[in-house]
Length: 329
Image 1 (tube, rainbow, N blue to C red):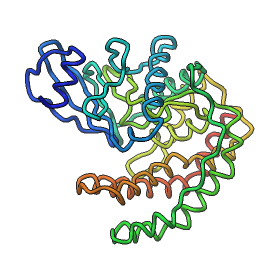
Image 2: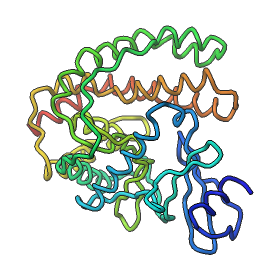
Image 3: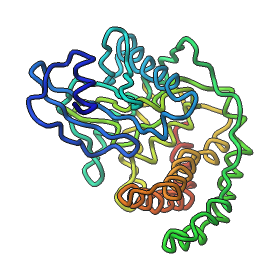
């Protein structure tokens, strides 16, 4: 009996009607479509490198409680884990699993993202921020992270000639962006809300033109305007990462129907606007250094190249975004 069968047995989901199929899309975890004689489910196998961290399980359980609260009390279109006997995460043979009722939706990506999509994303984001929920045991994050060790990561990449060359070209700029984030992040800590924190196109599924938010594991406290910049960078760009004013206005107007954007630290927000990208870049470099599986290493290379490009485009176009947002202040 394999582990997915054990999960189905423990959670009383029924017997397999066909072999589980792997579902593409996730970058951190593996997802399977599982059909049994009782229903159809998505079962997520959680990344062991993530789950081996001391506080990973607690943080994930808190994140799922956030999704439940926002869905049930604040009318957010969240796809939540299936709770079985009060449990949301299941351990089988030293691996962790989450179960979801199967959902027939799909994500949209550029060039298919329209202004209408952006408006609905802006509405969901505004509703989440305006909800300003509290979750027991979860508190605002008031410490500022340390700088990433970019030169150490560069030296560890020497065996990967292609990535090393690309990274070497950008390491000084990365250090400057990182310095800007760390020096300005403290000012953003005085205004935080609980939110999703990873609302990129792969984490929103669409059905009948309605957005449903998935993958809540990153949920926690964040400055709302910092997240707004992240979401704009995800949704209002084309395949070349160029900003689109129609999409920007659609997202902003929908967001503004829920929350005001008058704020004294917008300059600091823009300087910190690349923080999530820097974190994702550092994570994928670490994966590339440590991974043995060639498929995992190739996926990390792709993400490193993509994220470096996105960082450079954000730096290049930051003034455009600033000027557009100033029109709403």
